[in-house]
Image (cartoon, rainbow, N blue to C red; front, side, top):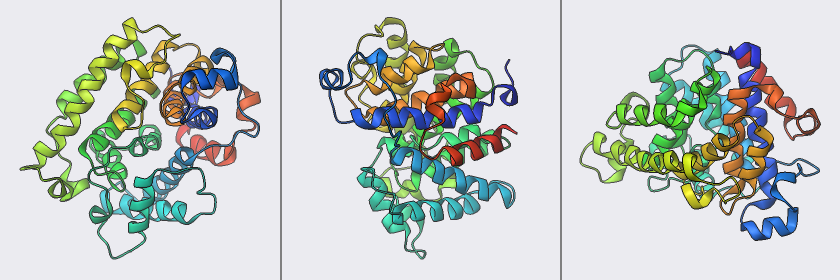
Length: 339
């Protein structure tokens, strides 16, 4: 097993996320023929100049800073994490750099989170399961130290600050878990099976310490019923992913197999599919993810996060990493967690 320190998994994951985000930014909202007409053959796609990222990377950094502050103040717990991450999300919401076509759910929820007297559960958009919930969750898969319960609860809480749908929570938990497995050297060939087992094991586990009474906003009879709805949708897309890994041609738009990625569970599955199609070719994986008919920047940022977590920082061309936007911030967080 490769150690996290040796391969600098956290740095590799954060850089890969940002590179995928920047590569997919110009292709989002385009179908594949339009992307090919604009960019040429997908295997030759080049990182744009300048290499500008979207709200996906901005919110990942916001979560990373909030998580760093929370961990510095003591053991990771719901009150401390909610306070620090909420502050970072509101700062992002107010920032003049928040001009990268952010999702409506994040804007509405962060606007409500500005009211310090409002319980975060009342800001959460209970019917939204957009991929904004898990395109930013990578820091919780990379930070060393938290227990499995803390990592799962924190991944779901950060999602729920904006996206309250149970599928958003489950997909964020799964995404963080996948990243943790990859940093520890899990073999990609067995990854889908490990994620399915994790989903089955947690299907009716509601993290009340982290989520409080969020479940009561969903018209479910019990918290277990609420969270099971999310895990069942994730299990369904993982089943599609299991078949796609064996059957899909790399030349085919991955969105046709596992979804366009606008919602959290599909972003996870399609991002994973692109990674698993090209485990030893991380740049090709990013290019495939960016040349898709769906939410290309979010799919590619997740693909990059998975590939970087598995292969480490040296997976990415220096000519790309040297000019990615927010490079200093990404390297600082990665170095901290790799150490």
